Length: 51
Image 1: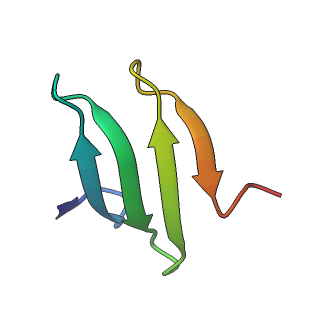
Image 2: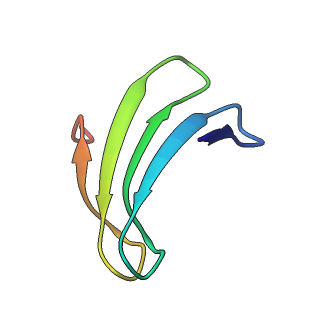
């Protein structure tokens, strides 16, 4: 859990290899986002979906 230089607060869940697989964040505008990542760190699904 932490805050990055964009002001986003994030929580990440890692797989057994230490790679991020789920990332939850609240951005600088207080919008909640959940992203599911593949083994290479690419977002494969996002909630809410981009419009």
